Length: 277
Image: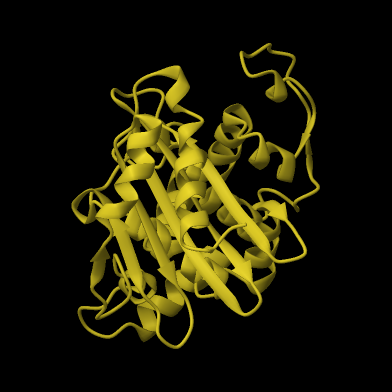
């Protein structure tokens, strides 16, 4: 029996009245019962880059905290753009649509403006270079019904994928806030999403952006280039020793030079807080 049908039947049998399977898995915008601490001082990093946006940083451990620059924006939903490649990867591996991180996708021969897409790519490389055409094909293979079921099951944002299976994260109705992104990543890091431990471990490894002697940075960018104003994302987490710090930045991207600011601003905040490097 397909895993998604098994979970559906299990949910029907075990769910309490008024509680859906999705609600059981969904994380709150922040951590349950936790307030969001405003960090207006982080605004200097946005100002230095000449951009407007928000940044969330939450800690792990016995006394976790959630901090944010512009908490109101941090609670506002935006299109996830290519940050949706994280859940898309989880679903693809869990359903068997993609066999594993080393699965090779042959280039279709169509020249696209991003040169890194014009080559045969492994699944991991497709994530790292954020290949839209490969992930659109993956979404089509997953299909509307399975995709909707999994997005709801994991409690991802507003879970509204509409009917356009290969563009809903780019220009559809799906929305997720920076606070929800950080909470989602926390559940991924702690094996608390409705996927196998093998699937979650594989995607965590696919997300590695930097690895040093002191720790690991796992992250994914996103840019809503099909809507105006464009919104840039950078979301992920840092692992150092026994500690984890989860972050989610989104910002208006109105000029070409704004795109690199996603990482510049987030790294400035992480450095100022002694998180990374």
